[in-house]
Length: 379
Image (tube, one colour):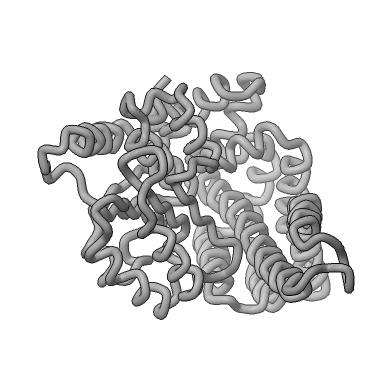
């Protein structure tokens, strides 16, 4: 099975990347291969997976067979010549980019390429982008840079103008459903439900299909959005959505944070005053990184909740338009009842309010204040 088989609904880019891999291996100097690539596509389309698959195909002796040591280690993020940088904080800082640049100059250990993948390149600060620019423009002959971002406009023009662009599409509901049936043990009904509500986001579809807690959180968030009776209730709902997001972030990170701390303490041979020189500072830096990661996780969880709420109002508008092609098929009766209590004009205003709240959250607005303003606007 090829490494590209994990790309759902992206046949158009599989051909492009396969040709580039062949050109890179042939050494003919074909323009199909270049040293700087920018993968763009909507959330969940698989842009990071595409970059990782491309990296695996480049280092694989069989152009991405999916079975050899090179392929399996790239896919598991353990290949010595392929570095996958996934920012855990709200931004990618200049010092992090400079460290990547230093390591990218090292000669490959086992193959012909040293590959650096930067996920969420849209989080590059201006200083970080400037630090990366020179390297992207004139990379080492053995180095390939693979950047990932939602859209071209999310990346500074100086960076994107020096990269080959790979545009991914949103996978269809049917292709996501088939993926879930083939790759998980869920039944037909669950696969259809998860594929619909995920709106082409493969990772979210898998998570929702296989995680009962995630399904429960979604139902609670949607029920909260339908219970906005007065201002007091709006403020209580805002606090509850924030609490849900924080609880989810804590549950997801607690075990990982504890493991990272233990590994660091083992490396510095102890805890507290028993650590060797530099240990206390390393622990402090780690705690700072974990706090930044937790802040981002909470915001990501809030954004996911807002997306669920947006799909509810989208379905209400569909019902008001005399159609039945809704996403939240498990809430059909509730959506029908709600649609009869308001007008399409008001529903459009509510959708705009949710989208504006997401935009404000992306600009680092205070989460609780953003949610309070949103739910007051939705009432």
